[in-house]
Length: 160
Image 1 (cartoon, rainbow, N blue to C red):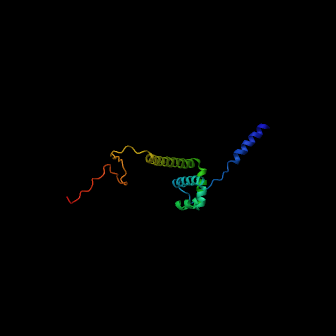
Image 2: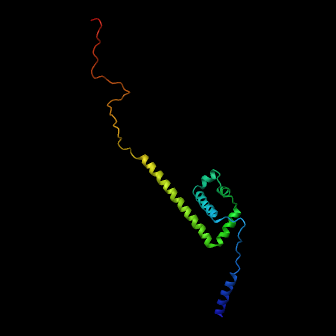
Image 3: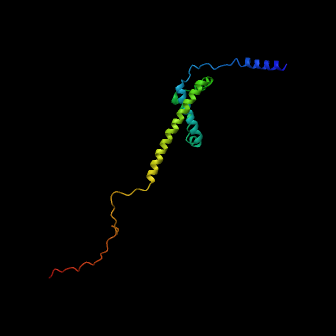
């Protein structure tokens, strides 16, 4: 009886999983390359929103209308395309691997820019080296009149 129950449960499980409703390919499916661009941009926008949420709210910046305008898509098209690609694991993984590579490339670019700017700031902070032109040292200030060490000779009269 126990074996029959296990066999019946396994058979029921296999039969119930056979009728999976797949999402049909939408008419306005976003192409893979464009989907990579959109998902990369979404990742950047989520990062910016989580980092500077208060600043974005203060300035009234809403990133999603920007995204839909930039790529000429609407939210329904994005959701339908995402659902369609999510059902095909290999294709969806390829898309997200491309997104990951792009994000890593952007991080490397921004890190190198940040490093160059840091080097530039550091070079400006360094003490200047010895100048090649000698600067004459003055013992007196040119704005203060000189005191004469010897008094001037008495004026000579013209009557002589």
